[in-house]
Image 1 (cartoon, one colour):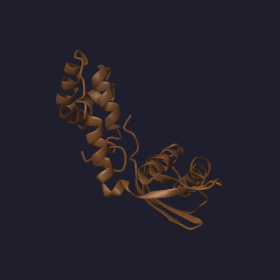
Image 2 (image 1 turned 90 degrees about the vertical axis):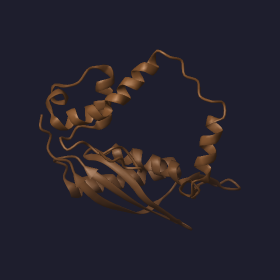
Image 3 (image 1 turned 180 degrees about the vertical axis):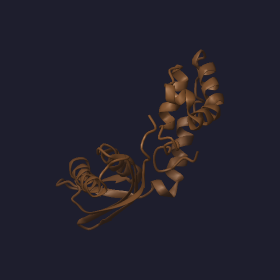
Image 4 (image 1 turned 30 degrees about the vertical axis):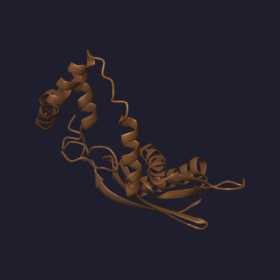
Length: 185
């Protein structure tokens, strides 16, 4: 089971969200499907050591080393992908900028709030003088009407850009990468 670095883990072949399965394993509250499905059982076996380790740590008080936050932030700042910034709109003197991961997270959150969008990854944000263009890859839920869902996705991204970032997004390109299989339940 591969993890998409730009977003959430992909669904299992049966349509189960691995994050939900992990939480069910941790709480001991698996669904009937998760107890019988070969895909869920295989993922549960992979998660077993992680669930056990997390359970062992629940009884202990764990303290992070004092320099951990500084070390992590130094690594984040050194990553060239996190260096890209974009201007935010504003009338006051000077300018305010936001880093790419923050802008992408805001847009991804808006995209994943659209009914019919199972997962979205912001692939590109291009900002020119008075123009912002966005490219997003999306996995749609089973039964979602692709043209209508893509149109609603574009509206949601434009609104989030306007309301949260002060951008007037000129173009939103949507790449539909997959459509979830109908649920077996």
